[in-house]
Image 1 (cartoon, rainbow, N blue to C red):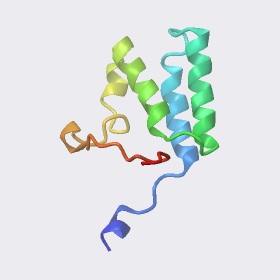
Image 2 (image 1 turned 120 degrees about the vertical axis):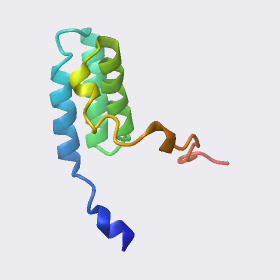
Image 3 (image 1 turned 60 degrees about the vertical axis):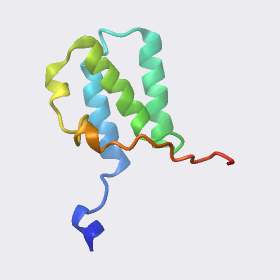
Image 4 (image 1 turned 180 degrees about the horizontal axis):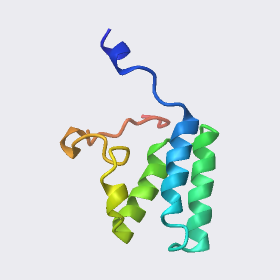
Length: 96
């Protein structure tokens, strides 16, 4: 019942749209290598080979680096207080 209150997660296309829009803020400020790296990471996310946290982290680093206050205030990039972040590694893909 509790999980149904949250609804379905947004489709990958919605996340890609948000990230591409945010990327537009920085495309004239970053190197071609950084552009290629971000696009490659986003492609891997779409293919299911990369978690969403990776391209989001890249955009967050650009937000900090270039002081983009408008994006910094968007809930998409800081959806909950940092105190709620668990500092544990899921271990996914590891042989323990």
